[in-house]
Picture (cartoon, rainbow, N blue to C red):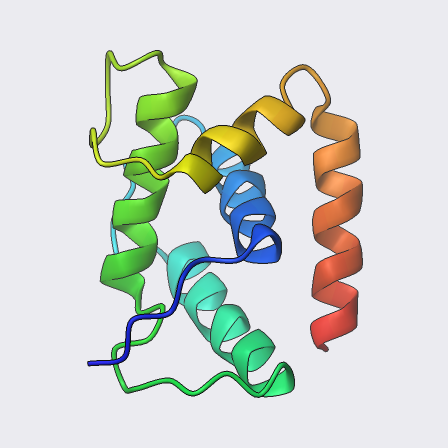
Length: 112
């Protein structure tokens, strides 16, 4: 299995989706999670990242969203294996959701 570190662009798209899913149970079966998985795979293709069939799959996406939940809730909820990038992206957009959504849209527009 190829291990590729998560990029800041991916972190922004994860945080964007996290806030859009507020109030929903995070699951690999959610259409939004499946779409983000496909989007991150297209981004990897565009950036010529070598990947395998499990790269940024819906299960991995839902786990990363739980890492973000852990950061956002100060460790009260989610999975405790959040990365330094998860903390950095959450801090960067703390109290700046409009900027987050704007930056995420730019990344998405650049993929499609």
